[in-house]
Structure formats: C-alpha cells, structure tokens
Image (tube, rainbow, N blue to C red; front, side, top):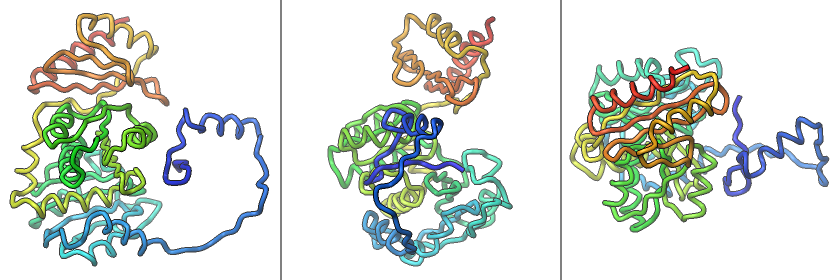
Length: 342
C-alpha cells in the first residue's frame, strides 16, 4: 500500500519537508503521544467531492459526448456514476466496482497491456474519449476517438490551454520529462512555463511558490490550483470533456496542435554504479548544454535527453526527444553504448 502524507490544504510532505524525519523517528521507535485524544467521525464525502469538481468545471460547459471508462476496479468507481449523472455525456464503463484484488487487470494504465479491454470497447462503438484510471484515481490515461493513447505531455498541453483561457498570464508547472512542446504551448497561450523536477511533492511546492494554475507530469498526474494543487484523474477527465465541448474537432485532430516532436518514452537501463554511469554520459556530452535539475539533462539544440537515477532500483531512466523518430533512435543508441561500457 502506498500512502501520500500531506499537511493541511493538501500541502505535500516530501523527503525534504519532513518525511525523512518521520522515517528516522519511526525507525528509532520515537512515537510521540498525542496531547489530546482524537475522535473518529464517519462521513460520506462523495456528494461534496462531486460538488467540488463541478465548482471547477461547470456541468453546463460539457455537451453530450460519448465516453468509455475503465475504472480498473479502483477508487474511480466510487464517484464516477455521480459525476456522469450531472452532465449530458454518456458513460460506458468497464470494471467500475472497487475491488482491491484487481481481478481484471492491474490498475496501472501506463502499461499498454492494461488498456486492451478499453481499446476493444472503443473499437466496438463510437466514442469521443477513452479514460483509464489507476487504483486511487489520482492518475488518468486518455485515448482519442480512434482509441489511440495520448501522452502525458499532450494532455498537459491541452489542459494548460484550457486553464490559461480562464486564468490569463498564469504560470503552468511541468516536469522536465515533458515534451518541450508543453512550454511552447503555454507560452503561445499567454502563460508562463515553469520547469521542475519529477515528483508530486516538487510539483505542488513549485505551484505554491509561483501561484501556478496547473501542473502536469509525463506520468499522467495532473495538478490543479483549484483542487488544492492536488492531482486528480477525475478532474483531468472533466477538463478534457470541456476542451472537446468547446471545439468541433475530434480529439484525434485537436492533439495535432500540440504534438510536435518524436520521443522515446522512458527506457530503463540497469547499471552497477549509477553515479559512474551518469558521469560517463556527461563526459561524452561536454560540448552540449547540461543541467542537473533532476539527474542529467543534455540539451542538443533541436533534441534533448534526460538520464536520471531510480531511487529504489539500480536503474537509470532515459527519456529522449527530437524532431524525428530516426534522431531519437540514434540518440538512444549513443547513450546505450556509453552505458554498456565497462
């Protein structure tokens, strides 16, 4: 089980904002006693949660679209019917009953195999949008009207334009793995792109510091200032439905506005010594522009790549972007050769 610890207002508790100290105290057995006894209150938050969502995306701004949803037997199923009861869009769903044994497939929509049932459903009918939620519904993965997946960068760009139309000139936060098209789209929409490290605690912290209206990550996490800077797959879905309702074009056409480069996706390399491997790649890239915001980012002009260490496994994670697929492949192979040196 994964738990995210937060302070009031959904402010994150990360490694550098108290989580490391909590770990030290737990390991040392230093568990403080509360000064006052607590109490347990049982509430049903679904209705107020749905009201909150529609306070951000008014239901009258969404038209009668057809939506296919794979709930993955996760928490999205708790509220999904109440959400669709309030809008004219038509819901056709799979695995909407919460079941912690996940009997149909793991609730991880970033794994292509886990989208197979949703793709099959969409190919049998006519849908404007496909949505796959992860287990706790803080992430959502989207498919267009042709059942083709959208990257996190594409969704970030589309949502950013929507939010900036309502909050002109606002900052938008994106992690350094997203496409450079994200910063371009934000700038074109009159916003201020702000680049940050990968991870929810960093995104939320920078959003608070900059007053950003929205934040997006390549991994399908989308953060909204109106949602306490917290990520929400359900809210991202509603904003995309609003985007589609305000444009006559299908999503398969809309996405072309913001998809401008080829990318590798995230490629994992197992290495014996992360620091030494990173140093070899940096030495080989000495003539390029380099930064260390999160791992190693090498700016090659028209192309770039980022190589960052996993915190839990002996891996380096590579992301490459370039104007063409051929250039992406060439850069991946160059980095691979360096990493395989002994």
